[in-house]
Image (cartoon, rainbow, N blue to C red; front, top):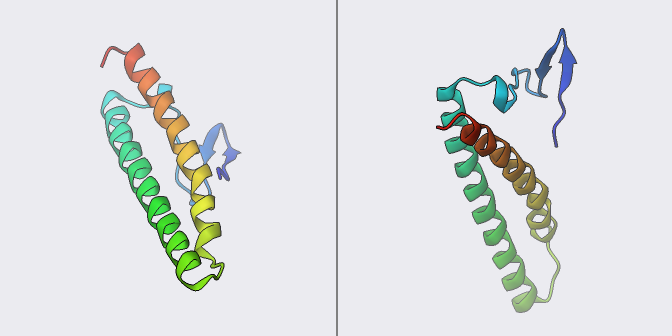
Length: 98
């Protein structure tokens, strides 16, 4: 969830860091951001799959519902947001012929 605010024409996210849109980034920042987003998406998907596997195992073995079930579903928006950001970065990268 993006909790950003505008302050004097700058976009600031919830941690107080300035957030740049892909068209505002330098070539190096764009390439670095693409690598970061790929890693973030991969790690999020792996974590969600592990939580889902744990949920299935616990449900089948003990017949109980656990909190990990909700956590695995909660990872989906995170993956989708990062995927949309990665698409924007790749579009900008293609526009710059990088």
